[in-house]
Amino acid sequence: MAVRVLTLLTLIFGLTLGFSVASDNDPASLDFCKDYGEAFEHVFTVPHEAALLNCELVNEHVFDTLNTPYNVTWYKQRTGLKVTEEKQRTIIKDKSLWFLNVTTEHQGGYLCVVRTPDKCYKQETIVQVDEVEFGTCGRPQKGLQRLQLPVNDLLRCPLSDFTKGVDSYSIRWYKDCEPLREGQRFTFRRKGLELHVYDVSHHDAGLYTCRMTFFIAGVVSEVAETIECEIVETRSKRPQMIEPSNKIIKVAVGSRFNKTCRVFVPGLDVHMVAVIWTLDNSSVSLNTSDRIHQESLIERWVETGVWLERTLLVFPVLEDDLNLNFICRAFSYRGNPSRYFTLQLADPDLLLPIGLLLTLMALLFIMGVLLYRAFKVELVLLFRTLFPFFYASTDGDGKLYDAYVVYPQFEEDTSSQMVEVFAMKTLPQVLEGRYGYRLFILGRDSLPGQAIADVVNETMSLCRRLLLLYTDASLCRADGSAWLEQQAGLNLALIDDSLPVVLLEMKELSDPSVLPESLRLLRERQGAVQAWRRRRKWRCQGSEQDKEAQESLSWLTLPSRFWREVHYNMPVRGKARSHSRKNVLLNL
Image (cartoon, rainbow, N blue to C red):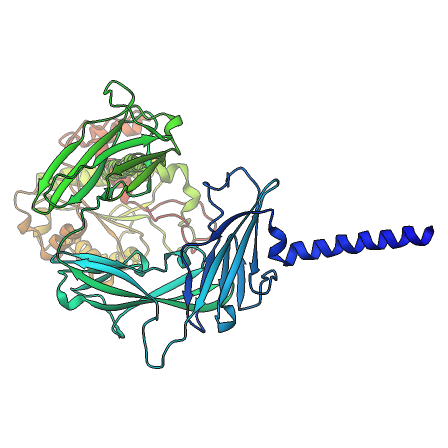
């Protein structure tokens, strides 16, 4: 009894195992699958090139490919074995079977089996491998395409299916074995899939070959197709849809959108073509009061045919309209072309904000430049007051005086006498008393009996600035100690460039050409602080000494601007420890 049970179990196990193996390798065991017969189109190829087999059963007309899980298996019909991947020779990718180096052994039928959780489908695809005769540049199997006279027309390379699954590719065109190059007659578009021919003539008839070299899964392979081109003089009356162009269009929610469907029907006969917009497999409303509607059909006749145009309007665009396919369809007994477009949310328009920001920055920059030019002196003085540590200290630079004061000293000249009072009393009270500068004035700070020439040369080398006070007549006279100081100071300023000069123009010049050439050159180069220019009265709100300084020069009411400019041109009394330390900011 036990022997019988064991024999029965062994028989059942063997039958089960045999059925499993047969179901995987024998197409005859797939009789329960729905058979779609033999595919209408055969796959033609030649040795040493690539061949592509697409399983046409993965189609929405067969089953719901979007919501139903499925798997695709390929079988060699002649051997009944399952097709598996071979390195650098056979690739199974999605629903496609790729042979990268075809031989005559690949010829025959291949069974595509699609399994879903509850159903099974199968269809056979025939592969035909044709030998190529030596010296032949075309392919034995040729497709027929026509070019029309005498307009521009195009040929389409039949290798578009290959481009969808490869990593990269390139296409070259040949006519009767001669390579074609872009020029006035030919152009390549869509990455070489279309050959556009301009001004078609009878000479354009012949054999055209498009050869594609592609890269997939680390393997380089190639494939070619040959087109037999005929030249026809009558245009086909099949409707040609130009727009829409199967593209995504970016829109803003709430905006108004319209798109025109444009169809061209060749010929001057009655066309009998209907053009409509559809959405969700339903015709769009013709009622112009609806949010989404289509307008009436417009016909425009031209010499070669008729243009049919129908416009779709959406207002306003809602979020529900996004990612939907708006399809334009043309119906005729010669063909029913259709194209679509899809609306998607537009990217934020940053052009206007960026433009406003750049404009604002430009305005701020211009205003900053204008304000700086208008209030340069005030801004620099304020910066020196707030951040004195950015400037090197004048201590230790080998100088004893901040400025050497030169003024006209002619007793018979009234204006020179007033300038002398200003230089001896008012100027020291403000610069020394208020700002703490140390001035050297000949006659006040020199010792009696010293030689003027020695005092001038030695003292100027110990000064950081030269304050040169002048009027229109004071510098035109070559006598007196002031003339000697003037010449020595200008020599250091213009020739040695070792002593900065600050020109204090105490009286308006009637003719600047009367000045000495050296002074005129210096005045043109750096300008002068003009005491005679009045904007507002100079008012000292400080000590009694400041009030006396104002009264001492009653004939010239100095504005506060004058003193700010004088202070601006004086040395900066920084607080940095090392005099040789460089400023970390702009040397104001």
